[in-house]
Length: 227
Image (cartoon, rainbow, N blue to C red; front, side):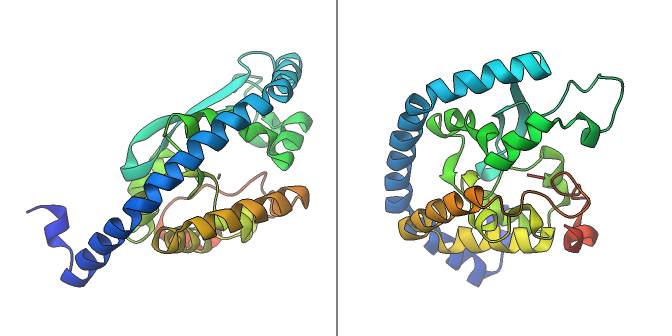
């Protein structure tokens, strides 16, 4: 039997109603994403060129970090960021040791995210949505947590302006699903404005004792808090 058919009638009705309501919103949002991401790529081109040179000098090549991430419906794409760590083969050191001073600055200022505007322009991501996490997390989500993939992943999102990496995993996923259920252009604009405040205030850059957050290992760790 189809997976949709196995869902409770109330759940199917709610999700079908949500999809119907989102069609005009999704169309308008996609237009905004294209315009702003292309404009962002053009306006930040000189800055990205400078960052690329600095990353090349400090970290060596390649300049860009590419990693498979699940997008809408779990479809996998390669996210693009500036590298913030040394090469994984560098003396077999840990991720925390690989994260350089430059890398910490790029993460704190979100400059490492600028190449992700290309993912937005290509339709793999949106400016606003649940953050795309690791592919291996897909099998660890509860059915409710997996609903975060009903929307395009975003460069920023509701969880990022409500605590960022300072949140526990269960709170992050709860906010991701809340965004999926309540997303609208007004909320997206509010999140974008609050993102500027969060980045300038250097809020929630890391979880206490970790460089970003602990690895999500499954439902039993949902309260223990990678983006």
